[in-house]
Image (tube, rainbow, N blue to C red; front, side, top):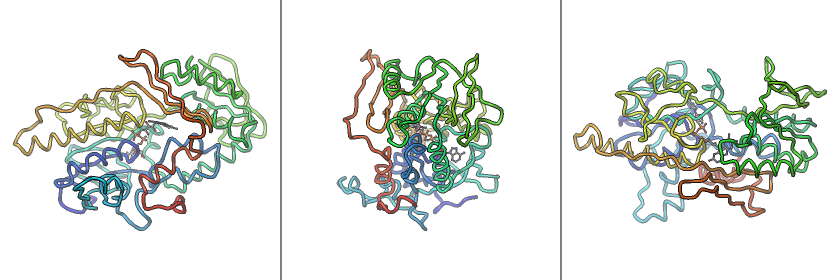
Length: 425
Ligand SMILES: Cc1cc2nc3c(=O)[nH]c(=O)nc-3n(C[C@H](O)[C@H](O)[C@H](O)COP(=O)(O)OP(=O)(O)OC[C@H]3O[C@@H](n4cnc5c(N)ncnc54)[C@H](O)[C@@H]3O)c2cc1C
């Protein structure tokens, strides 16, 4: 069993990405007097995924997309959650009467959670366990099968980024499979970054509309931009994935990329930008019926998992079927709901009740996205709502785009101790 720093019961959060981190931010001030907060994360560093489509295209900032949870040689994760747990941030100092939380309020365990039992989480091959009083699943999405449980260190992540950069550099004719945000951002970066501008780029998308999870207004904006940049777009066609996959490296000769139902596109490098699968598998041991056929976790509006007799396990973010669009922004609201509901259960227990009289409910908002269309243009797009039948479109000021896709901002927020020379840590 992994020991915590004191004998308090644990609130365990699995997944230290945008959503799990936000849960830690929200829950710690509410429970630290009675509970430890334990974050289980399989990767060595927080990965700023928003930057990932740009890494294969623009070399030199890939290391900035991996942000350490702790300072070198330290296991103290409190600075990462500084906005709630340290007195050194300006936010903290600005709050009158602010008392910093004890630095041992939060602990991070770098391991893969492989199974969940009613009272504990099993790590890795089963040798280590972590008991929990409350459990929050924010495991997001990733590669299918056992690969989804493999953690990655920064060195390996940076190496993969550089490998893609080398291949993009060599390629003349790049085929991007997937016209969602990932594929579109990569394609438009390729056609606006000076060294890659001259490459031929094709985007193949299986649906009739690009970014089809959004109102078709976004498809129109995106398609117009693709045409303007000279990107070929093939809509409503699936690619035939060859046995063994497409070559990972740029080939000397172009090859055929076949389309289901006929037709082909030629290319010398294929970049797969298709969706990942929900990483809900560890929950199967505890609540198999709470996992739907696609792997998403059924949740109630309280964000408790929808499984009879279980009230202390929550799920949110990309892994959960919350009705929200899969993005970091709505999950930030979800994190608040989870934290308040755990607090309510604790208050109910303290007054001798089994359940609180009323829980907080999560109501999904209209889907929205902050999308870059190349290095110099970006917009915020929100689907119509009951009050507003038209989509909301807000173009960012030209020149306000960050070439590192916001990595420096995340470092400033999550690693406030780090200077610019720390980006390789
Ligand atoms: C290229 C790209 C660009 C995007 N741009 C935007 C954007 O501009 N705005 C926006 O709001 N959203 C954006 N998104 C979507 C956003 O990144 C996701 O919605 C968000 O990452 C979901 O967060 P999450 O914490 O639920 O899951 P994830 O980010 O997938 O994180 C899950 C975490 O859990 C860990 N984990 C999983 N299983 C286990 C396990 N068994 N044990 C231990 N750890 C585990 C993983 O290592 C990972 O750190 C983008 C996504 C991509 C891919």
